Image (cartoon, rainbow, N blue to C red; front, side, top):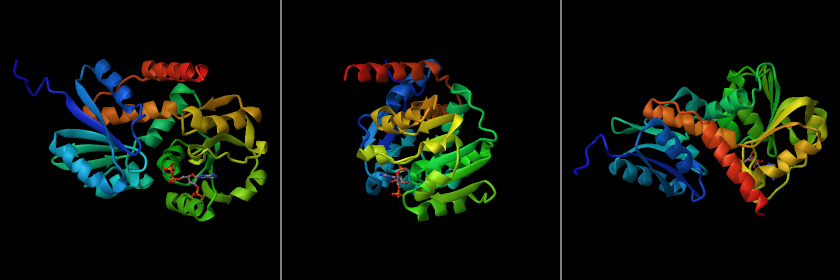
Length: 287
Ligand code: ATR
């Protein structure tokens, strides 16, 4: 039977390096089944210098949308023909959509984190004193959305202080957002929300943090997931923190937001999130 335009799967992909273990294909295929939309979702292993050429090839082959992950989010931002306001504020892009032969860039990471915290964890962000550790791409992607969600104060602490200063300045909200030195962590008082946005765990590093940062009903979030998130969350738990979250919920929510941009249909996320949590537990218990 000849393939019709209607039956042809829409072409999506994630571009990153490394990318082989990405959960995005599984998440997007779950959304596609739920929405009754046929998609192909490819893994494309490419680093930033080759990103533009790889995206051109993908577009020529019918690519309709792409997710962009480490280390390519800034490179993707640079090559977009148009960018959403939230991508411009983050200075990076995790979602590309092909529109009239050009790539439009968006960043769904911040919205994904806020949705995970507010909907899944039922954590009201309004008025919360918030600490963000790290001032790299991951931090930049999420802090504008946290401010928009109404947190009371944002303290950014980074190993290299100039990066924390630059991020705080770029936010343009001096009443609420400011940078502090890592060495001063012991003097900053208690926080309601503590977010690890460093990549220390990816390199097997461990952060030295005082328990005095943990407020009485604090939520601790690591933007990483799996083994990489364990040291920070274990630290928080040892310090008496009862509410802990890794970045799996954010991963699923940012994907849902991308899927909605591409297809106009917002998928529900609980089933695929629960499936991935179960799988992570099974892997852990098999160790
Ligand atoms: P990503 O896109 O994951 O944010 P990045 O832009 O390279 O990656 O940023 C990595 C972040 O983790 C930075 O904030 C980095 O601190 P520096 O700016 O001082 O390099 C932080 N980081 C990485 N390893 C760290 C460690 N061992 N201790 C503290 N911070 C660390």
